[in-house]
Every structure is written in C-alpha cells, then in structure tokens.
Image (tube, rainbow, N blue to C red; front, side, top):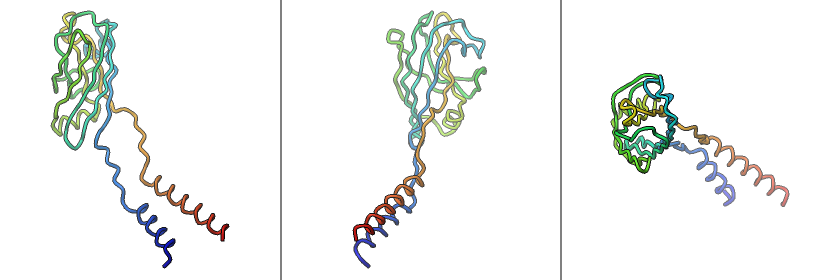
Length: 174
C-alpha cells in the first residue's frame, strides 16, 4: 500500500472514530425583575438584574455572577430557590452573598444531583430580598442559555469533503 493511501485510510479512521460530545459545563441565565417576584404577582419594583450561571455536571459546581440595580430597599438576603415553576414559591436551595453597595454577587457552591436535576429542568429561581419587600423585591427564573454545538457528524462530513477535493486535485495533476 502506498504512503498516500495509508494517510487517507488513517484520516478516514480518525474521522469515523467515536467522538464524545461532552458538555461538562452547562450555561444558564436569568432575567430578574419585580414582575416575577411575589409568586408572579409582582412587587411594583422597577429594579432589574441579570445572572450568568455555569453548572459543571461532572463536579456538581454551580458558579454565578449576578448583577442588579434600582432596588427600592436595601438588600437583606439573596438565594437560589427551587423547585418551582414560574409563579410558584419554593424553599431556599443555595444562599449567596448579596453586596448591597456593589449590587452584585459572584460565587459558587457544590450542589447535589437532585438539585441539579431541578436546576436544569428550569425549576430554580433567584430571589433578592430587601427591606422594602422581605419576601423578595425582584426575582428571576433560571433557564439554560441557547448554545449551538456542532454534531460530531459535521466534522466527518467536512473531512470527507476535503478528502474528495484532494483526490480530484491529485487526478488533475497526474
């Protein structure tokens, strides 16, 4: 067998070998406002916030960066709650540090598999409590962010296309 054929067969073998599509870190987000607070009845607060959240499904580590502004009261406590659909209340799952002066919380915690299942099912929410609204002035349901991940088959198709173009080019030269 010639060296070129061996190289082509090796390339085909690599492209056809099973490829794992591990999504070890799952991205989530939340839009936080007064309308979602108080089990969906709202608080009348015009404060808003947003959250960027990552969950590592191998280690169980939940990491967050949550920002808010315009609260009508001073922050008292803040946490992730669950399991609850929008418009429903649930107990605290993970408390987080709320910095009233910075209007931001950055942190992480390891969560259990059952908690992760509820989180990934969209059943957790963020609740920021204040002196004005002890039950929570603003709230936001946690959702997965839309991420497009190419399928492993796409890479194989690309490889076959390049292989075919290479074969056509070689025939023209010789």
